[in-house]
Amino acid sequence: MNTGKQLFNTSAIHAGSEHCPVTGAHIAPIYRTSTFVMKDVEEAIAAGYGDPEGKYYAYTRYGNPTIHAVQRKIAALENAEAALMAASGMGAITTALLAVLNTGDHIVASDTVYGGTFGFMKKILPRFGIEVTMVRVTGDQVENIRNAMKPNTKIVYIETPCNPTLAITDLKRAAEIAHECGSLLYVDNTFATPYLQQPISLGADIVLHSTTKYLNGHGDMIGGAIVGKRELIHKFDSDYMKWIGGIMSPADAAGLSKGIKTLGVRMDVHCSNARKIADFLENHNMVEKVLYPGIESHPGHEIAKKQMKDFGGMMSFNVRGGFEAGKLLMDSVKLFSLATSLGNVDSLIQHSASMSHASMSKEEREAVGIADGQVRLSIGIEDVEDIIYDLDQALHNVKSQMNL
Ligand code: LCS
Image (cartoon, rainbow, N blue to C red; front, side, top):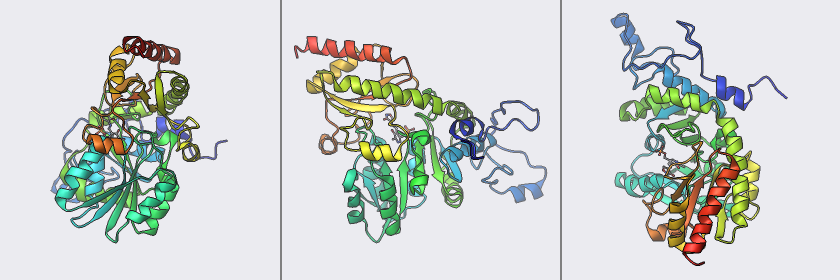
């Protein structure tokens, strides 16, 4: 029943998407401009760096109507007050971390995160005197966060479901621990999207996205978002993004707004396809292990059921025959594209160890369950029978060529 607040799909279509107030154009034009003309010097002085809410503009690096439109859309979907767009997911993550951290600070992060995030935390933050402790945060091990906290811990950083092992963290519990210890909770919500999981409603302070993935959905842009309370987001904008400069382009913001309009309907198909494919793989004699939070044997299944609307379109699996079998499988698929990235309408397959998580050493990967033979699937919204047919023929090919 409608309670007066717009529901998800309505918001995805309408939030932030105003018609052009000047011409009446149904779809507002893209404000492809670097700068904004001032009437006179008095106005220029008053405008300063522009207004973070878009009441007036000065220069696109400080704000632009097309970028502000997608910010309002994403904030509405995440049940948040404000959002800030970045040139990439990594741009959003690094901006949100560096906007808060100072030399001598400490952060606690989940031990499994996207390879780029891992690289930034392990190789760049320490250069600025910022210490990172990575701990296992699945199931009851979420309590490890408390043990890792120090007086100078500023941020707890979680990715759930995480890339590429689909491990799940109890966000409500993580938020409680972070807040009891006086720290902020950051959550990368790229895999779930706000359609399936709203971390702010579970206690997170900042939500991060690679909008490159499901939010855009069509694989034709790179972007990121930082979402949270107005005061914090405006501070990130005015004290950091404005000078670091990694903003999203207006053209990409317009493309992203279009993509988000169909997020809910796309996610429903991603989820239902993924569930059928996980069942198919679980019952296939060439598959050793399926990592998908939607299957009951997954250790994070109960928590995922509690905090997510559905289980998403991402999964990983270990093929019988190890690395050689995984390699042959990826060379044998026809419908899937062998490509990193995820969240597109079309299905993608990748080798996590050498692609998304190449920034980790073999030992670091093995410690968190990223096996050398592991294959990651981003299940698209094609007809599921066609996706299963492709995987089946590829697995048969592996079996016969390797005499397994
Ligand atoms: N967060 C997650 C969970 C990601 O999977 C990625 C990228 C990022 C952040 C960074 O976003 P970007 O800067 O690429 O927009 N994940 C990728 C992957 O698995 N393969 O290629 C990129």
